[in-house]
Length: 430
Image (cartoon, rainbow, N blue to C red):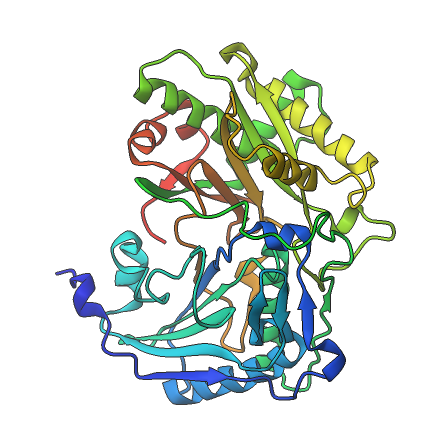
């Protein structure tokens, strides 16, 4: 018999503040936020890694993680600070919150019933994608299941960095946990690339909105993707369409069809915003250890349903991406330009229904090893707002797992779309 969510978690066995193992040097006391940083609310980015039964005692695992976290924070010092104002983090080494939680069920119960059990159990309640929080800029949690398995979860403020920054932090924390002699060398960009044009922002321009939304996960196997890529390559005349291009195009099409069906309307003009990492685009390219919101966007529109065809969309995705690569991603950044538009006309009505896609397939979450082997499952909860797709690599590293957030009624139609289900399988578990 399943355990009720309210019965799962005993009181937090330990809540401590982990501080950097070394003090932050005085010249680094203030971390200036870029225009993109300031434009975002905190949007605490959540990730959780599930590991099978451990040989070590829970207290030993907890101590090991806390010690390596202290070492990692010495390099990732802004996360251990506090917001001084809307444009500055004071790197005062106040530390981050670390929770030890015992969960009264086997790990399989959590994995098979994620929507009932995740938030408030393996994450601090209400923290994932939260717009603001009085506590630290990073919250970590170690959850211990009665089967001996563990979950390591993190929520990191988007103010400090993007998904690539979160990935770098987790890579380095795991590396130092395995071997304390390892050294992390992140480089914080601050406002070097994107200074604010007219002084500090008084309020964020982008925040999380999840009212009436639900979250579902879909799996595109490597074999299904290979067939779809070959089909689109032949029909669109595109060389080697990527798994991300074809998966995001199919998700976009299915979501717009669901919206039309639920709203009982003809096709509405729609667009897909793809968030793009600029690190490989700069001259010279930046490595993954550059930390900040180093993003731009592409935008692909469809004014009528005849334009919502897979070959056409993949062609447009490729064209948009190639155009972005031709520009200087700092001097001609499409995300910055869009944010400036919002500042100038905050109440402008967009004629398009907008969907968003974040591609994290290059982050091999299933390779994260803290010293206890590779995770059984890697996942994130719903967010950050409606009409959002997050793509990540599956355990084989060749397929794609898509986390989809839509309004509840739209999801009912989306998950029944025959074209989608020909290539993707719904995942009921985490």
